Amino acid sequence: MNWPTDADGDVLRSLKDSGFDFAKPCLIDFNVDFDNWPPSPKSREYPSLTAYEPEADTRGYLLVQVFGLLTYELVTHVQESISDAMAPFGGRCDSWGVLHRPT
Image 1 (cartoon, one colour):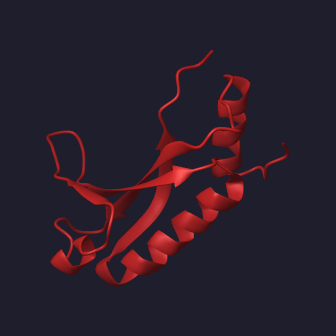
Image 2 (cartoon, rainbow, N blue to C red):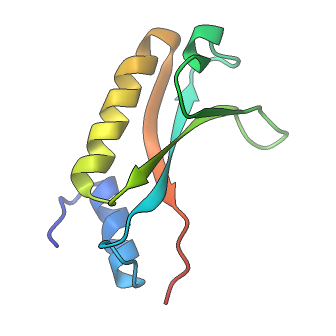
Image 3 (cartoon, rainbow, N blue to C red):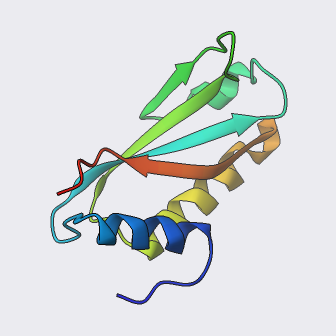
């Protein structure tokens, strides 16, 4: 697998190096950060969203989960789509993750 030399490619390489199985579908978490919290209530009307309120050491964010095969194309497409949908509310999606236990 040959991924671009950007943040998403770096994460995918790290997952590969730790034994992640890219042939199995998985649950992928996408975080949506906002310039101001709380975001507009309309930003929470999308399916598959969970809101996490700010805590003492973290900012609030929305979590979007997608189940599928983890690919660079999927990650970048979903981040772009979510960012486009959340931009009117001051939101952007530029982080993601999967639950993985290294082998």
